[in-house]
Image (cartoon, rainbow, N blue to C red; front, side):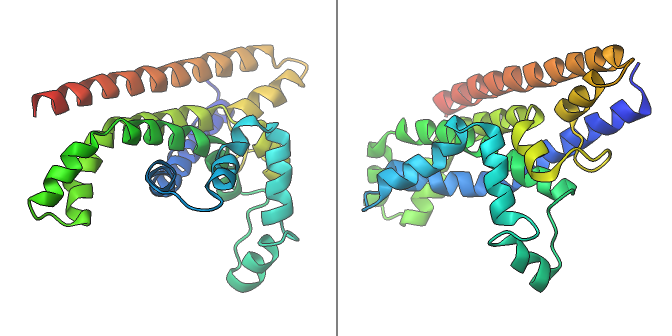
Length: 229
């Protein structure tokens, strides 16, 4: 049975993972569409920047967020002065860190789904008089829906396991930024924290595995539905 402190960490992790995915998903769809369908100068650079959080040490990602969005950061100082928005030591900051780290996974899943869309179907819809917007919502979007759902669930799984960027950017504040990985880290530094660390580890495994299995199930179900349509 989990203690109140452990339930707080679990609930916070789920909340951070949900909002990180919710806010980043529209941007991920747009980014994937641009990378898959557009040709422009600097596309390779944009491609590299999008996937950079995937290959950088997560502590580096957190430090870059600190330099950018921290209280004295390039953008953070103006967010605080103009809008009163503070990300350091807050759940919002933990959400930003999780969103940045999981963003490449979301974009990649959506991009692969978009590249698999039959362009002939889009062309046929255009010849029948549909506008580009109509083609996107009636043809392209339904066909790339498996990638969107898979990307969202992968983002949730990644956000649930995010540690390095979070602790570097927003520290380890109970009830605010102490998600499951940070709570496990704290437990390993407590004299009698082994049981707590083990319980939270099991919860983390169950949540991550559940997200991955659900992503696979959704992908198969939607592909079957599209095939029947």
